[in-house]
Structures are given as structure tokens and as C-alpha cells.
Image (cartoon, rainbow, N blue to C red; front, side, top):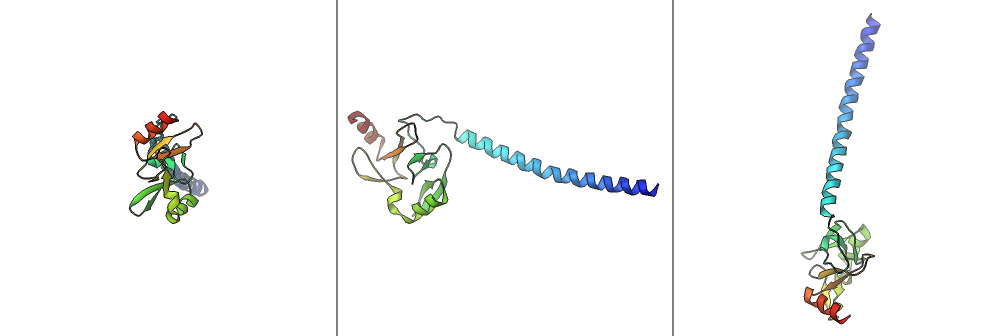
Length: 141
């Protein structure tokens, strides 16, 4: 009889501890699922070649549309974006990584202030001083 009581108590304690441990992963999974849903909402926009692309969806070192928010890189009061730690370092250390060339005028343009356009289906982007410069570039191409 005493043996059965001890086994029952040990089993009850084991079950209780399993239940309390099981709650933590469920909460974590729910948080991950919620985070994924937020990212889906942020990236559901389907950009076509010729579309203006928001800064935060561009790796400004690779000059590529990435389809999801990139790592913000604050430099001199402006926010650039990179896809990895190497890009973050380059944006911090190399001013030329923070500048693009307007294809219409040939002038340098700060990537945070540029009109960014998806140029091909592979994700290449280019930077223009304004929407008007992009339209003029298209007309002359």
C-alpha cells in the first residue's frame, strides 16, 4: 500500500512538471507564429519591375530587393539597410556603400534619400534623385 502511494505521488509530480514544462514551448511557438504572421503582412506587397521599393526592403550594399525587412544601420543620423553583418560593417565604414548613382543624371545620391526602383526580376535596384529622374531615364532608354 505504501509503495502504491509513493508511486502515485511520484507519478503525479512527474506529470505536473511535464505539464508546466510543456506550456513554455507552446507559448514560444505561438510567439514565433505571431512573428511570422507580422512578417507576412509586411512583405505581402508584390513588387513588379519598375516599382518603387521601400528602403527597408533593400540591401543597400548588394543593391538588391530582399523581399523582407533588412537590418537597420544608423549612420550620421540616417538609416541604411543591410542583409548581414558584413553589410552592416560596410555601411558603417565605407561612405561609397551609402551612395548610389542616379542613372539619368549621373550624380551621386544618398541611398536613404533616393527614389529606389526594382530594375529586373532578379531583384536588382537602382537609385534616382527623384521619381521624375526615373521617368526620364525610362523615356530615354
